[in-house]
Amino acid sequence: MTTIDNTLRLARAGIDTYRQPVVFMREDCHVCRAEGFAALTRIEVTLGDRSIIATLNVLTDGGWLPSDTAALSEEAWAILQPEPGDRARFSHPEPPESVSAIRAKVYGETLEQDRFDAIVRDVLDRRLSDLDLAAFIAACAGDRLSIAETIALTRSMQAAGETLDWGGADIFDKHCVGGLPGNRTTPIVVSIVAAAGLMIPKTSSRAITSPAGTADTMEVLAPVALDIPALRRVVEAEGGCIVWGGNLALSPADDLLIRIERPLDFDSDGQLVASVLSKKAAVGAKRVLIDVPVGPTAKVRSVETAAALERRLRAVGEAIGLTLSIHQSDGTSPVGNGIGPALEAQDVLAVLRRDKDAPGDLRDRALDLAGALLDLAPEGQATGGRAAAEQLLDSGGAEAKFMAICAAQGGFSEPGEARYHAVVTARANGRLAAIDNRRIARTAKLAGAPRQKLAGLRLLARVGDRIEYGKPLFEIHADTLGELEYARSYAEAQTGIFTIAKDG
Image (cartoon, rainbow, N blue to C red):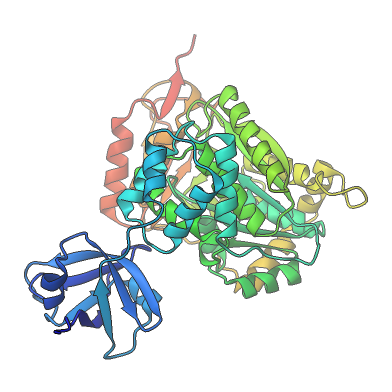
């Protein structure tokens, strides 16, 4: 009997495919021909006791790749960890167990716990293609996940990762559902709560659809890509941290789903709740504050939508043992002066340092949230809520704690400034009645945020201000002239970013 050689030597392609394992082969290589592989085929790659499911990209003109070699993307290389000269075996994988569950959800069926477990398991094993994941995300969008399904998905996502054990200590946490540019309260809140003597190991995400996530902003000021032992050291030393959750594998399935959600550019209530609360439970939190900004151009657009989201949050929180406080806040316009990682970092520092020009709205929001979180402390530990938060901020205690956290995470850095600036001015007289959150955020993204940490924009006028023709409204910051012009052209072509009400 003739044995088919389905092995190829491995090489490193040096291509970042953002958490998606990809294999590159020549179409004329013996494995492609023998196995019948074609472009985008899902293939199993086995090296010793390690294996991955990867997507195949086919080279029609061999060029840089020898016919006896398969090249691995950065993600595939990191998982398999081959040594020089290693050869891997390539084959067709078994069909994913959960595809039938995804198909059922697409057609409107209600899924039970075991089917969510199967989906999450296949997500982690990379057995699902990007098309499968996109179908699952779309099938769960809107109101297509019941509360019972949201609880099941949350449990599946938490169980798939590690849950931190803090030896019975009361662990606090907070989260904002997003949609409000510049609303960078987390570093301030964590500093106040930790300065009050409570434990708050804050893990945060990078931006999905916004110009900056908390991790993006914090990374301007201090390292955030800590592992779990490092996180523990920081929290045990300082009572709190502000780190990137994607490096911790606390809810690893969520991080893989976010990779698909980002280009789709939408969220659903069910997946939002499962994502947020699975991570809160995984970090060991028991007392959690959720900030829900509500406004016509925020992520949550009406009080009715906020009420529905609150019901879902409370039901899931109760089911997985969290004490929740839901804080509904004003989401009608951006917060602070800066939009973009470094510009928001400047606002955070201005508030912590009690600068006279610090944005008052960011300060007030942070104090409201920190106070509400302090009020969650059990009887005997309660510190007086907002008044205690204000005292810790005004005394410099919060600033000192923030600097100590930065030092523990690897060292503090002052935020820099982008190379290029351009001012956008008013084209009418009147009163600034509204700022469109979505379009102002898009302008900052076109300038390069959050990929370029120094990019974004600085607001120079606020809602309620008296505006005169030619008065500066905001300043665009970019690292390249091309991005500066791209953002400025978009902003100047829009008529609704700033609504100026004519004098009556």
